[in-house]
Length: 216
Image (tube, rainbow, N blue to C red):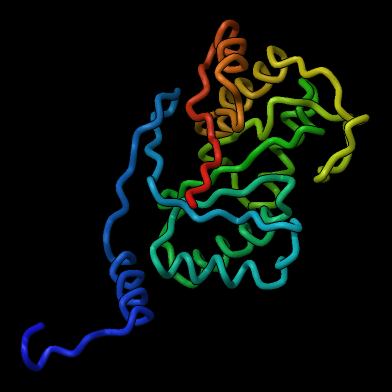
């Protein structure tokens, strides 16, 4: 170390890195879908367990994330975070923290109890109402299974599981895409075999298969 150079603590270095990240442009990757919307590589997840545990403070947390430069946010019906996210977006637009909806990339997910052909569109309408948005950028089937219709809950009971008609559910997802309620559609937690089954009948292929990877 050169004379006169002061070593920063790890905490200060971390704060410096976060502050620097906020002024850098986040790389994006174009989705192969009907809209070709680019998805930011870095996103902010809104899930916690138990779901909804921090609803009272989540809005403020998301607003701070906006200030740091986050523009990609991931939510889901079962997370109970759609409404706080929607309130944060409204406040951030009103306060000028973000300039327009076009800056954002919002992902949400269809829960298993709504993974039935006639329930997909109503579920997305409810999501959009919670988010106070006219569309989401990406809408995913949360899991490759269906539950008896009802309120989104996790964990779920084994006896509530019912056979999933992936062909008809995906057709409803395609309809959501066709009418502009979502810019892209995809899946989450699908195995290769289940993806092959879906692709065999899909008119619009899924733009994303979202999976969780934990690094230890």
